[in-house]
Length: 406
Image (tube, rainbow, N blue to C red; front, side, top):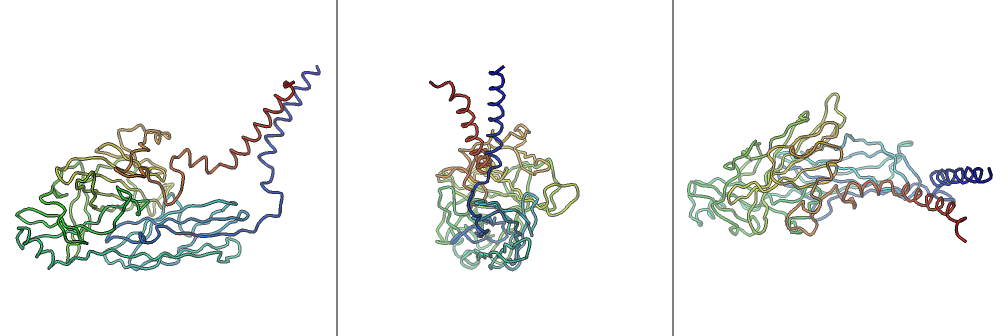
């Protein structure tokens, strides 16, 4: 009977310990007043956008004081640009920032044909009394090609092409979440010029005017399952050109989508990258409004071979072997290669160590968030809870083991 009572007491003490570690205040001292800071990304010199492209702006709200209800507001945008949010979080956004928490939010900054450089500015306001707690602006530059049409025609003739040449300014590839990281961890902003004539084509570097390659397979000649239309600067105006992409099935309730064409180098070989972005801006019976997703198709510019695809999935970007189709999952709008299993745990099949080729940082994830793997991200989010319960279990272990130690 005595032993049974002792067991009940131990069990009650164990339950009390686990309850206590979860409800005990984090600090016995006087609480620090909320101190909120705001940071914007990407920083100089990568705070720039190409003509008619989508650039990610990431916001980080930090609070080193007590829990605070705040509202994030967008105050100013560069001229002739638009924004679209993600994850169903629309601006102005009310959020509770806990002590020592970093809250991340991102938008797609969409450059229209006549977009101009300028400041994008955010405010963090006390949700109770409308007091401005902090504000931050980020100057976004427009990157325009340097060479003009007369120069291009002259260069084309020098390389044996006729004066009847069509020019296309194609931006150099940069990562979607981290514009400062290229395939070689050295993102050099700028353009290449594709000069096309009946005699062939040449590819020029816009900064130096030097030839990169000649007689490539031009994007609109590459066979693909599906095609889109990208807006490309031609020296004296924008032209719509046909670019290859993958087929998209699943939740197609997005309000509009855009196609972009980039130039990249992979193991010294020229590559075309087509990026398709999807925007949900309004609608009925859709959980994630607003939202933005994208899919990239990487193709050899030498023979048109499909090399791989890259797509977003839960704030991360994953690389897959060439696939013809992607399924956009409903409710949380994550594009997933259609030949992969459709489950909530399909992030386990993603190639975490092989997203971008020839890079010292092979992964990619939202903004400047430090955790790469979704499991690591969840552990970071519930770090305090995990630590408290680990301590509680250790105390429970001592409770049961101490009497046995002689």
